[in-house]
Length: 449
Image 1 (cartoon, rainbow, N blue to C red):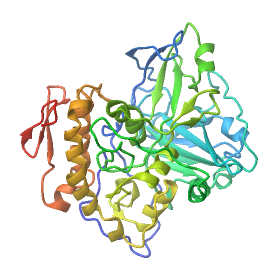
Image 2 (image 1 turned 90 degrees about the vertical axis):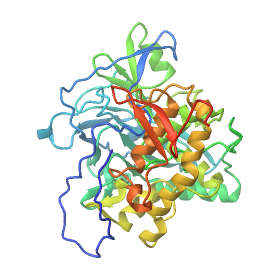
Image 3 (image 1 turned 180 degrees about the vertical axis):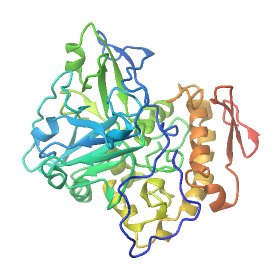
């Protein structure tokens, strides 16, 4: 997905200011959970039909921006739609209805009085447009600790200010002159400080992981069979998109209000959705869900829930954002500052030096732990639909191709770091879709052998 310099060196103590333009990624995030929603026949909330596209851009601009509303951590700020626009209008427009440009916002609320977490996912609309249905204003508990996380299906997502909204929300888009890419957050460190304190006090208890149908503990977002080259990025938010390109929050009330219309769901390609929907479904596991304040009576998963649960229960070796993650590089060089800024937003410990976040060790754990479990679970995952049919013809081949991509020279470059080829290899059909897999040169059948 993303290219990086073959010579990764620590960032000097001082470098001249560099342009704010972030390096380009590839237009489609092929190695995360699929981004194309299916039509929702709104007479039945979960009924689905064939996939549909409502594209409003002939040549999608891969670098978009989100205008952050005033007081983004307040109830009114949460209910105010974010506006999607082009980071550079000269490169074309950005439209939320275009799958490869869509941006997503995920909010989590911690109540210090009850130690309960809830979720509220703010809406994204195109700049200077109105939503299909106005978001509801959530009822927040007193002294609530609110945080936001952002994801994008494009190459980069830049947060733009409204009358000081980025400072009001304590928003982090990267470091000076170098954004993360598809990811950003607001007030996440404060949220995790509050929730970690509650977990330490025993007033907040993440649910146990449980046992998967493969006989192993259910995976987390820090399991090497789940992660890729840029783990802990993007969110689980889903939106409704109408045929005319307007959007609404994914709620039962909104589906009912859009009766007799055809709409699609649009989702964010992410490790979080891959785990919470595809892998948990295949392995007989269940994600941690909490009350959705936008959708009364319903529960929702979320990036911060996944990170808290992983921090509590993931057995060693634990996958943490490595120093050679393309999203934490600065000018294609390792930056401990940028790495730590990213880690703080996803409840991971900062490091003093790049060696403490070794890309080589990360690659070795992918080989030792990640690939064997992907193969062992083939009997379960090969029977499941692919998150992206353009990558693999089922969930197993998708996971294998995703591993190959992450391992390769355009991402973590494990080939060079370890001096060995990927243990997983795939063959593709005429359309470039992975259809068979080998593990250490031996064919993998549907039983994982």
